[in-house]
Length: 432
Image (cartoon, rainbow, N blue to C red; front, side):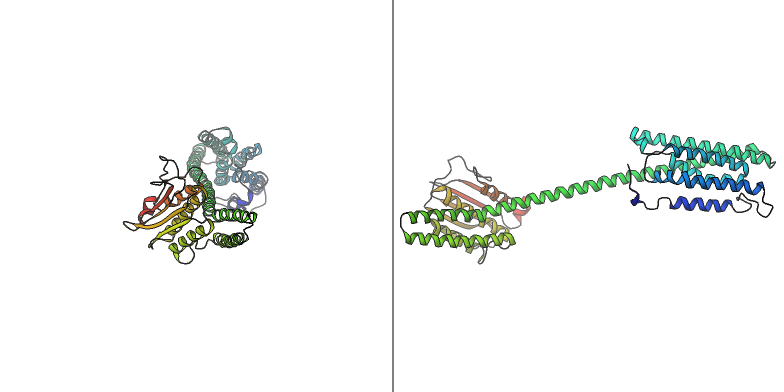
């Protein structure tokens, strides 16, 4: 995986600070410092200076690019391992010049674990577990090489200074350094890998959340399209169908020379067109579809308009019920659908529109006509009539409120549409 540089604008800040502090510490005379200032400028000064200068050049020329690639998860280059080999030789040579240069291990061991550890190339060729194992083994191998070089250099320096037990001391320092480096490297690597796993899980969670948000938006858009389809069918489509019928009646009246009837039908066309404009504006603005007077007044207007447009006799038996707005809208749409069915399909002469309460505070709307009803045995308890998108949407509306839609033949002739809504609160709980 490649991470863009702008995400980590200064990934080498702490490496630069660590190298700078270590070089300053090694310049301190005596103690852990590598210099013996105050005397003539001879090999005791030029040797340590040369070691520090080579270390600084190696870090600037090769170390920083190698560490930057590791920080940005870029593939390791062969020159990076060449940099580690040069560091191993330099630390060994520096320790031979002055045992104080063994202090370089404080920065070189971490560099080894960062550069030689698991990288993108390992993950590309091997399974994650195998890649991590190979990276750890490689880092341990380089750490062992550094410890051996430092042990050899320290032994030479101790011998030159005439230290007792020089070999044992050098071996002890090297073994302790190697053990500490491996333990610390393993621990930090485990922490890093755990952090990477958490980061990967967080990234998966983020992608899952984005997918859920996209699906939610798509679902919301689909639901809104379905709602608009139902609204258009129950409002504008019904009105436009009436306009078509009135226009045909006007044409027939004109063809028959009945100017008075043609004028009356044309007036009805104009009134219906104005009503369709009002319905369209209400639909666009998502305003109250019931208009003034509530449900009973809206049902009266719908029935009166049907009588005026078609000549059908619409008997109304409407009770004033304390209903929620959603329940009133569903019942209004049910009445519109039932009356439209009587006008378009049933060839009826009389329609009964009844609104009554049910025990417990519910409502039952019935639209019955004396026209041509469906065949016996084809009652629709809660679904669409054949080819009827309106009943499909109506059943969905009623079901959302815990209600039911029944459509079938009447007791003697025609068809009956019944929409029953449960009492307020109870229906919504059942639907959920």
